[in-house]
Amino acid sequence: MSDTIFVLNGPNLNLLGTREPQIYGHDTLDDIVGQLEDRARALGLTIDMRQSNHEGHLVDWLHEAQARDAKAAIVNAGAFTHTSIAIHDAVKAIRTPVIEVHLSNPHAREEFRHHSYIGRAARGTIAGFGAHSYMLALEAAARF
Ligand SMILES: O=C(O)[C@]1(O)C=C(c2cccc(Sc3ccccc3)c2)[C@@H](O)[C@H](O)C1
Image (cartoon, rainbow, N blue to C red; front, side, top):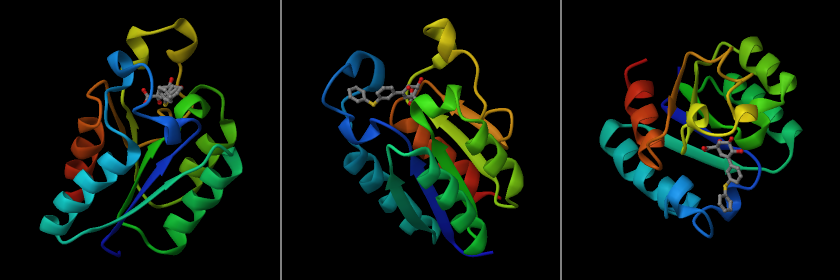
């Protein structure tokens, strides 16, 4: 197993920090990756953070996480959380442990956000703590 943690982000998260801070906080993905890299360095780990608006990229990157024997994959699939059987199947297909994360708490929001295809396949889920959701997931992954 390598010391690499994949951090994979889905649609619209490239716009994070620009709108709806009351839901998603003020941090951008660049802010979050900087926080993660500082902590990962202290843990002897490496972060590989990516974002795409395309479902197939996330599927390909989950396959790559396994191919590179990643220690874990932290996944915020955004809206694909609630729609993507393809990403669910990729999470089930790989040996790499996957931690689902969300900035908001989808269960406290609209009904259509209450179901997660990713959550049904992941090792666990951390949601509702803004950027800290990612940091909590890194701490959990470090103990795998
Ligand atoms: O809370 C999350 O992290 C979540 O994964 C993120 C989502 C999301 C949705 C739209 C935009 C963004 S990122 C954003 C937020 C504000 C302005 C621009 C982009 C995230 C939702 O689709 C999900 O239901 C929940």
